[in-house]
Length: 196
Image 1: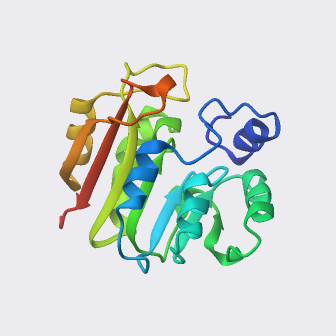
Image 2 (image 1 turned 30 degrees about the vertical axis):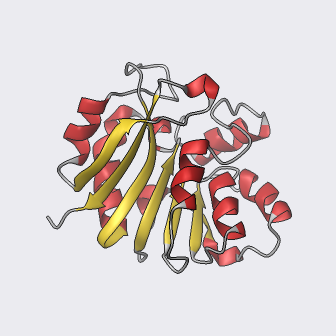
């Protein structure tokens, strides 16, 4: 069943990875490249093959955590990054992660893989995982919501309505630097945790 460990293990083992572009996405790379503080605690949920995680690690960010429900992509990641700390690979369900707080959470194709009825829980959980003043940043798909995901779609106004309860909307606009197949269908965002 979608959302379970078995479902995602099978997707990785059978290479049904339509969302996987094989490298750090250009909007995420551009955002990471302007970060100055290499000491921040960063979470990448639904990290999959971990391109963003690897890029951060290569660029001196040592407090970066990858989270995924499937260990299959982590096995490949460990071969590529043998020096990456084992305890920073979090093999668990995102919604069950406890006892950790982050300065920054990066969103790249995780939100779109969740059933739409999980979106409120996602926003609430993201809020709870961030330190005061923490940031969630990344990319959301911008195409009509559909039932036969993942990926599921959404639009700017729906995202604004959902996230504004928990976050100050700092940026939510069309990504100018999407890869060619995704041009016109990605929104880049920066949301800051609200005190609620």
